[in-house]
Image 1 (cartoon, helix red, strand yellow):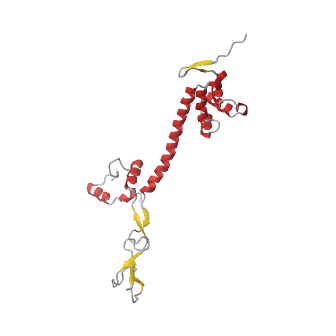
Image 2: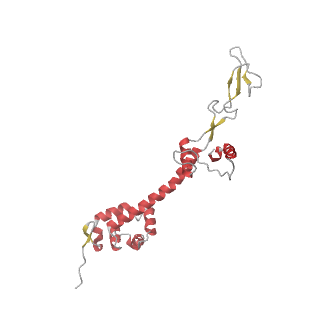
Image 3: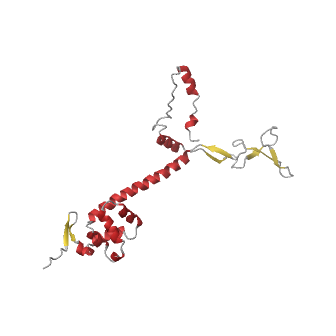
Length: 228
């Protein structure tokens, strides 16, 4: 006489639960896997394909096989000998790895933005608002850059004069230093400075005298380590 199939099995974390033969009745497991949605979510399928656990690879193969389309996810998982606790622990590990990978990719983009923020940029001149000239009084000395009449006198108004903007020299742009906080962080990350310290410059004077060493030090161009 054939042995009857066990309807329940004991799991350490959950106690007695439906066995693989009646896995469809394990509603808690089913609700978890339905939420995870391994049939519809590419990231779950990719994680299953990349795992080194053969049980999870078997689960993916069965889930993606047409003949298992109407079989509940929890029945397939139990047939692959994967408990709910094991599936949960596996997905938690995978989620942590995905989060770390996302953070690593994001940190590269953030660093690029930080470097961009740290750079000196050309911005519109605030004095002339990008016009390149400003209003001037009549009678300025000859040779005043860009001094000229732009509107002749009328019966109701005096003549109007302009001159080159002294702030941007008529270029319409001025240099704006990069964000100081971003500069500090980029230099710290690059190792050029220590946190809370100034720029560290190591100069090899090759046995030069103290006086000549000081002379060499005086001509060191700090702009060489600037981001400008």
